Image (cartoon, rainbow over all chains, first blue to last red; front, side, top):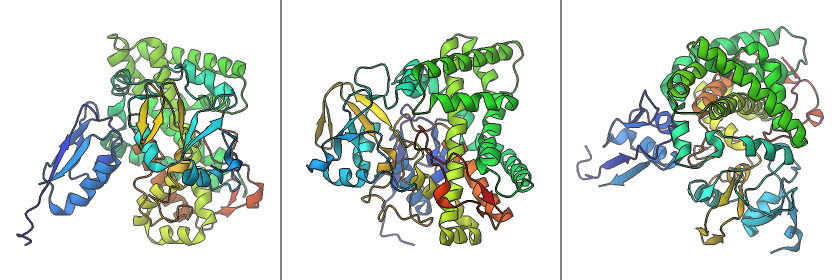
Length: 73
Length: 400
């Protein structure tokens, strides 16, 4: 609908920084998951749908090891 | 700045049980890097601004290792326990991450989700038992202490029947008045107990965390025995005393704010947010987090020199008006998501998903099943845990 606003969020995760606190999964379960073997972050969606952008941003802000980066491109 | 702030001892006392010491408000405004005097005559910085605290706790050049020169020791007895601690809580990277990752799979959102029916059953059973006791029975003894202890002992594979022993160990090791000799004796007893436990798991591994650590980490030589004992000790103590105190203090906070309580009773969907606000408002880890600078470090324009100690006040950060407008107001509908009640940086609480799950189940079930729950004694008679490393109430007599 909003075709003029072609700005998408791009998310990257740094798995070596992650400490598996799980906050991103609690805040944005459609965007982040945790590896069964060690609890380390798994990115489910690099470009989340607009309805998940706010929760993905919050996840990045509360990540204790600053392992989540959000870029708007 | 002001003369009144020239010499401050830490820890400071509170004037209102629900609020951090009043001094924090002045310090945050006038002296966000205040020198405070500890029991041993050292003068670390006390940090009270959210942004400064966040910067320190996420900088690996601030060490959390208690044996380093300059590390702030807040109680003499606690110093003994901290210096003996070989768990990842008291290690910098890279060793911290290596050891922590031995247990992170046990506390993921998925694993705790699978545990939730058991938490619910335990909460339901404890509420039933508690409601059959005489009116005025202690909620701490009969509910908030048993609940997290039952859950963490189940996860670890430790007999719940031994709870009096490790509750006593926690009381001694985290009490401000414990002597070094008492702490040493208590640590020895606890280490011997956990050593025997590990021996049993070596012989007969079961479906529990300690057995998996023995099989997957100790036997192949990824971790030595003393470090493993320390990790289990950390999981056991952090798994019961923090949640125990948060549970009881949270119930008391709700009871003292009846309008807020009415809101969550009528709107169970508010409970998740209420848990975050209770965590922010209570900040039961009221002493620390503590670090020492490994080199000269600029923190938002302030130079902290190598070897200087820093105390990052969690309660002060969580009452910073820059982040939380009108911070002393308890409001279950505020956006409290960025609180640092679980700490920040690589040491942020490993068990926070479990803690949140327990608290959510408790606050939902308790006020639903005991809608007339109330204090059984005047508020002024309650004894708050000013003397302990983890804040809360010593006893909480309730009626229903």
